[in-house]
Length: 299
View (spheres, rainbow, N blue to C red):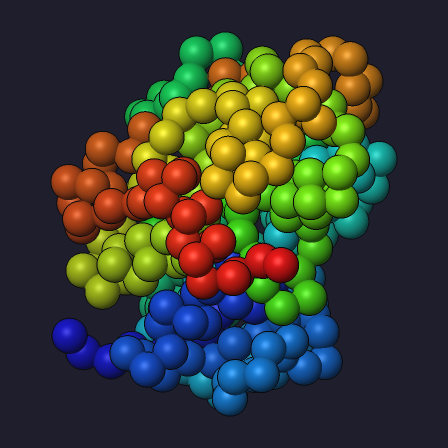
């Protein structure tokens, strides 16, 4: 396997940190993010980069000359995307356009992270060929980003995923971390029974992306977890593995939350193409949670 020069954006986040772990050593990696320094203790070649700044994207790609750019930077707060539409668009669409144009200078492959929120959630899980119909502004921005990548004329891979979870250095809360912290503290929580996905551990997702890059795959791929379940079932699994009380978990439906952004209820992604094309093989939810417990990933 030939070493590649890989530029990763958004590496201060959960997936970005997992990508750095998965690709460093095998390739020459430049990690970037909006923060002034990398949050972990690892020795990482890191530079600050705001992908919404076109000149900064141009400069860093001229200097580093990547073979591959993996864009894990995004405005992912689904409800804030409804109220802060310009900020969402600047990162999720303009930022992607900036990276795509910068990639075109030396025809680097752009790996763009997308989401099952581009679908309406009426009939999931979805395959790569299913027609998008986003319900909210977040999904619309991510679909626009996919179209922007296709329009520039560069080699690309669009990786759609859903409900990324795990632990990292100074990462914002994700669904798993919220469940773990709440249940460990003995707090009662309300969890929806009508939102279905196949959540994926960040490291499993990063390893899948690494496999796709190593085997030079292009086009659209769906990468999700092994188990298709609802959020309430996910919460019960966390309680089971870590020995928390299930009596703290109360079932509700999405309409009771009165969230600003609509959610695709039966979302999730079919992962057969990735399994077939490059051997993608994510762990089951209970395998991941058991690993977290045994390795004291969370405390």
